[in-house]
Image 1: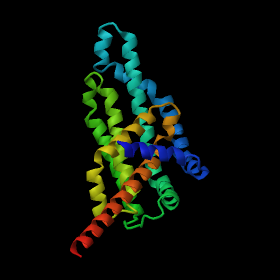
Image 2 (image 1 turned 45 degrees about the vertical axis):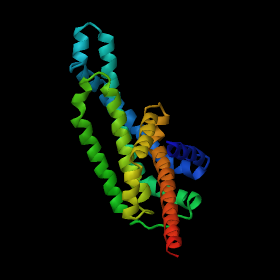
Image 3 (image 1 turned 30 degrees about the vertical axis):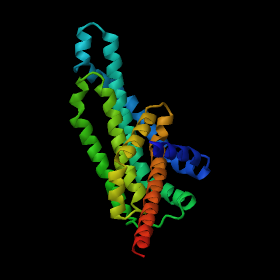
Length: 247
């Protein structure tokens, strides 16, 4: 998926700008505060609760106490990480995303006309609804943690889905018409999810993960605006071909 790598390359190039860092640091600092607070007050309690549940209780019965405690602590850490990520992604989507979008649209994609609704309320509602669906989906799929290895994959999947659901809409709502948004959502569904998966992996990297929501916003702005630019150029070519064919 070369478009994903192009968006990532442009995102890291944008990090050379001081203004971009100014936008990104706020959610990262707040995510760190949430992570430290939850870890201090809840990590040991969650690990103790997990140790009594399958499959950790089965592993304990087999005598592998160290493995059961390790998996229980990992499970608690993944929940804390997801909660911190959820807080950071909401702050990024509602506050930081409009600032990043305005800055990058003016500097990197000035030829793109703003033909969307530009509704702050709609973007905020989309982010909040995505957060609700994320939490519900997480809870409904928790029984799948009993399947070995699935507990490590599910957090990545749900973070990737949350990234796509939140940032793809926000990146296009100002510039794309409803028809353009539907076309891009259909054509770019898997690449948009792949970009979200890359950012979900980054969220699990110590310290760098605190910047993952802001980096995701940055990546989706580059990806979506470039995809919209190519879509509109294709439409122009199609119109010219039709005109020439009737001449």
